[in-house]
Structures are given as C-alpha cells and as structure tokens.
Image 1 (cartoon, rainbow, N blue to C red):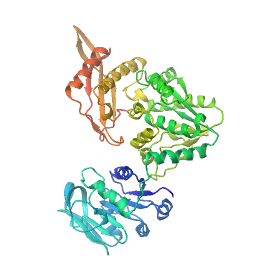
Image 2 (cartoon, rainbow, N blue to C red):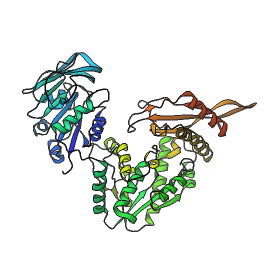
Image 3 (cartoon, rainbow, N blue to C red):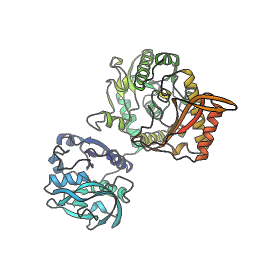
Length: 512
C-alpha cells in the first residue's frame, strides 16, 4: 500500500474515533478495525504502526476482547492505550490485576525512564486516567518509563521491538502532553512522512475518479449541504460536464433555501444542475403521518422515486456520487474502516439495486471537518463550507407530529429568525448546528387583550467536532430574550419559546 497507514485496533473504547482523529490531525492516515482483525488482514493493510485502543472490560474477564498474538510479532511499532497496555502485558507474559485504587480523571504522570515515546515531554504533567485494572508485572525485556500515584507501572517500553504502552489516554485534551506523545509515536517511532493532507487527497482522488468513470456519466443528488457540494465539485474536476447534478426540493427545506443554494451553485461553483420541485408530492405522501420513522421512510422512498425518474432522463449514466462519511462507515459496517472508494451499489442510502449504478464515495474515509478542509483546498466559498449540517428529511423531523404546509411555513419563519440572529451576533461559525423545532404542544398566552392558545417552539444549538458527541451552546440571556420576542411577535401561531439544554449523549442533536 502506497499510503502510509496507522491501524487503530478497537477494543470497544469510547475514544477510538478520537484516537483516529488525533492521528489524522498530525497528517497521517489512520483507520479503525475491531479487535477481531486477523493477522492476515493486518499484513494486507501493511500499516506503519498499530495503536491498541482502550476498552470497558478487564483483560481477565471471560470473553474479553483479545488480539491475535502474532500481530505483536510482525515487527510493526505498537502503542497500547489503557486496555491496550494491559493486553500487551497479558499476551507477552506480564500480569494484570484489579487495582486497589481505581483511577478515573486527572492524575500526575511522572516520567522515570528515557524513551522515544516521551521525547521532549515534560517530566511531570497532567494525564487523563480511566481504568480499574493495572499492570503489576512486566513482560520480559520491557522497562517502566513512567508512573503515577496509583499506577507504579503507568507506561512501558521495549525500544528494541518498538512496542509501547501507556495506562492513560493521550488522545483526550485533558492529557497535557498527549498530542506530543502521539506525534512521537508517529514521527520518532514509526518514522511517518505526514503526507495525509487535503492537497494530496484531492490530487489522488481526481486521478482515481478519472480512471474509474472514464467517458461515462455520473449523477449526484445535490442537497446544498457540505458533503454533497464538496463531492460534486471534486468529481466535476475529474470528469467535467459528464457530472449531472440534481437538486430535489422536497418542500422540507428552510426558508428560500432551494433558491439561494441554486443561485450559489450557478454563480459561485459553476455546477450544472437540474432543479426538481417535488414538494406537493412529498406533502401528499406524508399526509397524516406522525411517527418519525415512518416519516423518514416515506421521504426516503419518495426521494428515490423522484430521483430515479430523473436519472432515466440521462443516458450512459453508470455512477452515483454520494457523500458518505467515515463515521457512517464505522457505525454501519461489521469491519470498521473497510474503506473503498468505489463499490457496486447495494441499497446504500435507501436507493434501490435496480438502478444498477456503481457508487462513488470520495469521502468514505473522511470526517466532516476533513471534508471541509478538502472544500477549502478546492476553493469552495466559506458560506458553503461552514453551513450547518441539515438532516436528509429536512424540516419533517423538526416538526413533531404530522406534517402540513401551515406547520412548515410557521417553522420556516421561526427558524429563519433564529439563524439570522445567530449570524448577526457573529456566532454562526462557533456553533456546529442550530435550528428550531415545532412541538405538538399548545399553551395559553396573552397577546394584547386576547387569549391565545398556540404552538410551543423549541430552539436548539450545539457545539461539536464531528457530531458524535455535542454540548448545548451557552447563549447569553439577552440574545435568547431577543430571539424569543421576535419569533412570538412576527410568527403567527407561536406564543411560547423554550431553549433545549440537553447534551449528546444522552440526547441526540435532532429531536427525531
């Protein structure tokens, strides 16, 4: 394999994706596989280094995740984190026991030995612990290189075989020197070149896409979101006018959204696209449906029907461009990180097999922020790059209950006020996602001298890096008061506004 790769082997850790991100942030490509990965699979991947993640179980538990011992004998540098260090110890002849004093949270790491992994790292620094077991006896030819108050063996190394283990989590921000430790593993131990950059990604993928598509045509469902927009621009660079973009207005878009993004496609991105207004069809199919899963399925099926009809209008179309991201792959495949650029289409995203299209997924190995960086490399304007994520079913999952045109219009107006005020306050790019939700709840209010009995609207705004976890955004009260007043005064049908202060987990970002 030409591209240097760090293999992350996952033992069920909550931080596995974070490890992958930290490696990529250091300009080295990384992929995640489950602990069931075989020796032969590792050989096929040809990683320049392997990182063993943490995990929730004890290595001494019956049925605990394990690793083929031969993987540690390949001569590939290895870094074990938390569960990973314990597994290294157990496989290579050390001993792991239940700790008398478990460590959760911050601890002081004291470096007591020389090691490549701790090059230029402070002798004493704060690290993040999360373990109930610890290593009590070293495997042969290993040495202790760091300790903490409750972990006498907090970091180990076998410099000759380039195998290292740390009891703490260097990937989390609470570990002060964590990034430096990861970079030491990548650049000092594994001797990586650091060629995982947006520029290299764009150049290599344009070449691959040209070779795969040839003189055929590709079709792209262009929603106006970051992923589909950047994918379309990238593929167009490869095949030019043979890319056919279709924008379907489902009627579930935000205020004036289809018109605005259409103008931007034309004026700023020079994307030739077909606009299809199917809003009446979608509304008719959704009539009287309240269950969120049914709404999603109806919208997905209707989208397929419309998209399929449009695709038939264009001859020699053999490929479908889709903006699948790496978190989708990790969460939906049994072999995490089994990443390919192109595959025969098998009902991905709900599209039917009978379309007989082969799938082009240029971002199948990227996180959202990496897609944004690719967009910048392609000189896509920031107004596209920084757009907040928007769900495929659109406003249909932001109206709790059945969908009507009246409800959609109410929500559109309220959402537009909220987003415009966020932009006016200079907060839009500090927020991962912000939106309004129309609740199936009515409450008593007073407007003038009249009693009202109108809808309750919830506002939602969160901060996040990749959408996997999120915290609610802390607006000041004056901002929220102003937005609430504007919505209640300007939008007929709403007399009460509330703000959602739930984090993910346990809540999700969207309400449905």
